[in-house]
Amino acid sequence: MLKIGFFGVQNPKAEQVDALREHGLFSLTGFYCADTLSPAAERGHFNLHLFGSFNEFCENVEAVFVTSPSLKQFDLYMQMLKKTKHLFFENPITFSREQSTKLIETASEAGVVIHFGHQNQVNPAYVAIKNSLHRPALIITQTTTSPTDKDNREVIDLLINDIIIAMLAADSEIKRVHASGVKVMGSTPDVIQTKIEFINGMVASLTGSRISTEKSHQTGFFGHNSHISVDFLNVQAKILITTSAKISGHFTDVIADPENMIVKELANFYNSIVHNIEPEVSVYASFKAIEVARQIMKKITASYQVK
Image 1 (tube, rainbow, N blue to C red):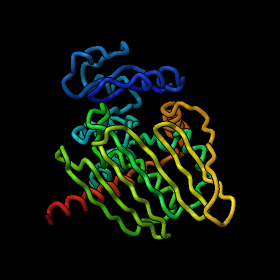
Image 2 (image 1 turned 45 degrees about the vertical axis):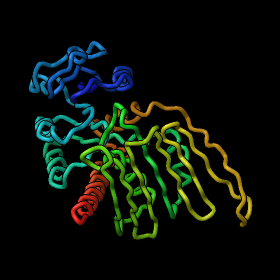
Image 3 (image 1 turned 90 degrees about the horizontal axis):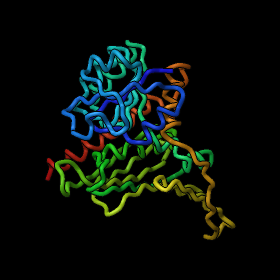
Image 4 (image 1 turned 135 degrees about the vertical axis):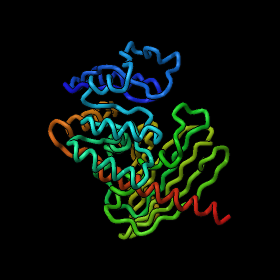
């Protein structure tokens, strides 16, 4: 088993702890918080060992589960890579082009793995319809959360998973990116709408918002005589079955096999390290999606300056 520890500024989620403890592939050694600990994190909610220093933490792990990744901790991620620690980021964030290059080059030199969590890819509803996707002409996605959500990440970071879905479905290079954003309450865009055009003609229209009254994550894939709907949050999917050339047909529910998504992602991470098996989403695809997210933010920032 690989020795792994949690690194971040918050307590790990119960499902994350359970996944590591029950996985059989990893040995959970404890956790380390780079920032000042809150009283609740003194020993953690799960009786985890709290490492007293960054160096002590690194000496006792082979792999690191980075919870709530933050650009402020980039230098520490670099140090962990140089200490030959494999990194599993809970979710992707918008590293700059320079930061992305440094991460990839350092990981390659150290012979370690960087893996980003993309739960969309292992969501049972998406897995169930994945083989039915045949280069759709249009993808429409809406991802919303509320201001009170505990996992209130930057909107652009929420959209990276949707960008990955679009890139893999298109199987084509990107031709053009359009984007607009609005700062409603925060210092960064609270609502983002982007249209990504691909060379093969496919278009992805992605909307992200963190000022909704409810949390949702739904995607529609549209093609000739084809419409597939995926509700990532409720793990449900529907496929439109057409009955004739006319506008008629019916939706049929897709049966999604229940599966622990974190367990599957960790298995991908383990296999990448131990068996050199390419994960569901390669690190290069992850960084390419991050680069697209960076382009979106650049266009939004430019539009603010024009105003």
